[in-house]
Length: 406
Ligand code: SF4
Image 1: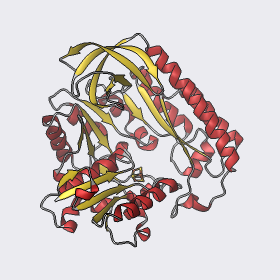
Image 2: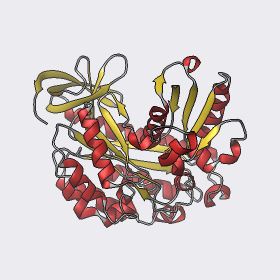
Image 3: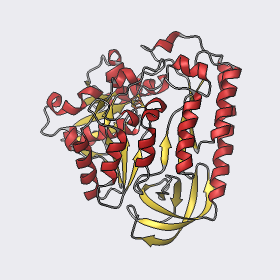
């Protein structure tokens, strides 16, 4: 069977969608040539949800069987009154039974160039008052260490040089099956081969619980010194309204502990602007936090009320305020990022090339996961390069020589 696939949302949702599509048949790039269409959906904000609904309606014009996977059928099934086959995130592992397939999505490996994304768990342990993902993905359900290790080995045999471990909260991995993320990282990084591991987003509350072991597990040369840890607000009062389960100080302690051990590590964090109850003072607290910690990447999202969550009907700050705050925090982040990138100019660094970039170029990564664009390179190779320039959110490199070892 020929399958046309489109996947949206986080890397986990994208990987699961492709693994499902691969289990169904051969992937083709034209919906007209396909026997069935698979769309992996995201509902994280209202705008995305509307886009998903629009896209499903457009794809129906091809008259093919449509499988709608992911967070839309899981959290907003009532919107899908049309003739599509919904597969929820908790049905993913048994999708072959529902769709009558010979293979399970669990039998597949998803590779994008030389990047393999492995969905290590579904769901989380939080109860954030704004988050629809909890409804879409439920309580944490971890996949076994044996399954993950076998997927990593298979991906390496197929040429992967970057392994992405993905989940809604990778720091919550294993809590339901009697293990923990550091132990998984130790197992994965002891697999022979030339590769790097990118650990996906970790919630601060769960990260605090495993902090010393996690910092130790990161000492493997195979783990990118990269931390994605969403703070969401720099104000304790707002964090409490969000029910995040930690204070600003806790977040800073995690960042400082990691930076003490890995001073050049790359830090990515997220903030929500315009959460109900936010005022000038709480926004200034967030701004000051960002000034202090200077993250390398800051994902800024304007609060979007999601149905079925407690914050859905809470009173929000005015649109003008939210616009003004978003602008100020975005400007601050550009300054931080430019300063950090300028420090890299002229340096010689080691990189791996896990994927293509845009406009026929290649995207390399340093051990700290900094993105460096190369004009010419070979996917899956390791190089010594010189940083010669910078461009919007990435550096530009020039290859000095190819390397054999990680
Ligand atoms: S888990 Fe969140 S980000 Fe990922 S697809 Fe679902 S709603 Fe979107």
